[in-house]
Image 1 (cartoon, rainbow, N blue to C red):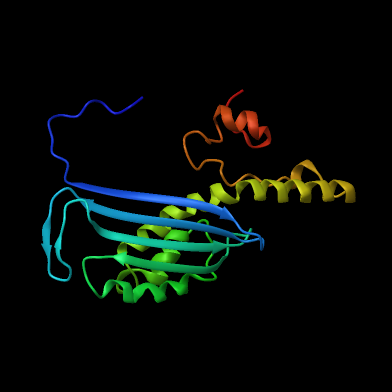
Image 2 (image 1 turned 45 degrees about the vertical axis):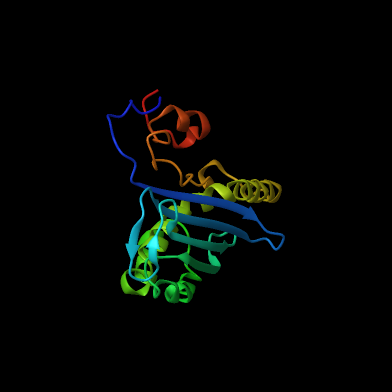
Amino acid sequence: MPLSPPGSRKHLHQRLYDFQGYEREDDLWDIEGRITDVKSYSFPNQYRGQIEAGEALHDMSIRLTVDLDFIVQDIEASIDESPYGICPSITPNFKKIIGLKVGPGWRAAVRRAVGGTEGCTHLVEMLGAMATVTFQTLYPAMIKRQEERAKQKSIDGETSAKERKRPGIIDTCHAYSSEGEIVRSEWPDFFTGQD
């Protein structure tokens, strides 16, 4: 259901995020993100002079390279447009992200590594959102690895119902409530609702 019709208004600002996920040939994955901010009006800027309507105030990108365990193997940050000349000089600092794990605590770990004066607010914000994109990109490979491990355990005679691990996605949102129908259908061993 779309949003309700708005009242009379004037468009002033547009922020766009674009995220892409790629599987590489070397068993790693690249997650790329880009943020752009554009105003619908022209305005003066001390560093760039006049920023025209429709011209990017911010144009920043990140490439995050991860392995199947969600460990950051490499990162590259780029600032192509910014309101200040000093902004691009912080991008090498984002190498501090290498070695961190994308998962629970990701946003806090990113803020500790490159938050405040150690980074760029916009790039740090974008890295937070890239966690979900990383999960979505690696999901098919994760399932394949889980199935291969389960098959091997079955062959080795090591599998038992109690060994099944609770999927991490359970209770992360309304749809995946442990008391809900999706969990009842997809992961009945972990359903906690009423029958």
